[in-house]
Image (cartoon, rainbow, N blue to C red):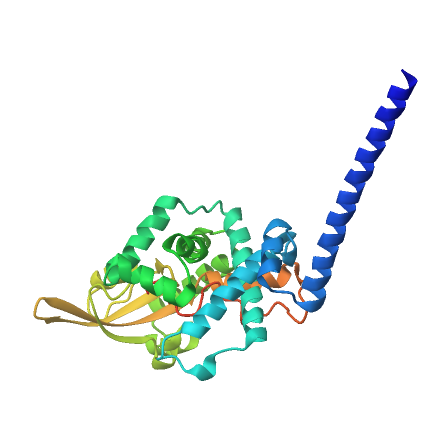
Length: 332
């Protein structure tokens, strides 16, 4: 019996040694690639495959890692776009490899931060919503085949990749804007309402002209023109603004009108019918509420953001969650 026990003991030792050897090889393998990634910017196809298995971090946003494989995929998408961008775009605007990497990491950081804020508001984007948004894009284009062709040509994507990489972020951001606007506990919204009520009181007193008050208090580009918006037809303005303007008589001013942009005080200057169309001429004073970009830029100053990749950093000026070639309503 004793020789048998010794043989079993020796066999167990061999198995343990083999196991330890394999663990050591794996650890050395992981370490070598870590040195290559963080010290020498390895970005070849084999490194991409390894990083899709081993979750090397490229950046940290409030204790949430952005994987190196996500960074490489995003960078490849940008490179593909710049190599195949439309002739109408100047070739002088094409960034070099280092600039593309900087754009990519900054974009991913901002997108992750928006994801975190959206989670606080319990914002979710369903597959049905993705499909509906995709259908809108198809309806605005020549055909489904044309959309697929553009996605493949510009980004080397299939429709499903486009939904996940662009539409989900776009819809999340849109929902976040609505949530921020509705959040009356946000300090910026409280201050905006208080300021709007103060300005409305000044308008009602009539001690200063509407135009002068607009120049002093309005927070949009029309302020320098005394809030003058010119003529607009039905359907050109957001519905809340349009309905309030339609309810006014010429020369009359509204109470506070809340839209996605903030609080408006509207002065209707005139109405005129052009055939079957009704055109309105108006001025307004706008006091802005929370805007998703402004809010994110303010909140991100407090975030813990670290970039681990050589020669790259977080640049808020490059941190657009959208991709070049895609406008804000995601049409192609």
